[in-house]
Length: 44
Image (cartoon, rainbow, N blue to C red; front, side, top):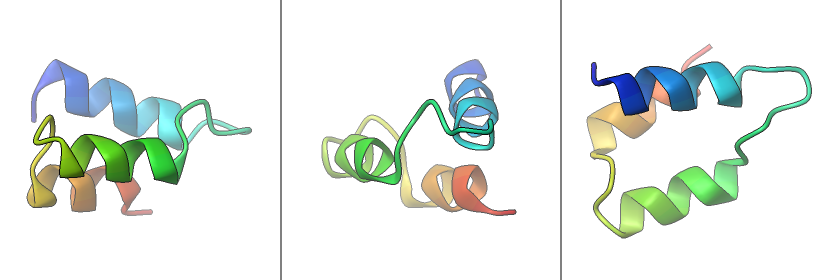
């Protein structure tokens, strides 16, 4: 995965999360990340 995706995953899994699910959904809708990347980021 790209550095962006790895960074987003790390920020999403922080406690508390520094990137929200809503922000990730927005990035998906805008084409900044793919569905596969989105799934990878939010996976436990």
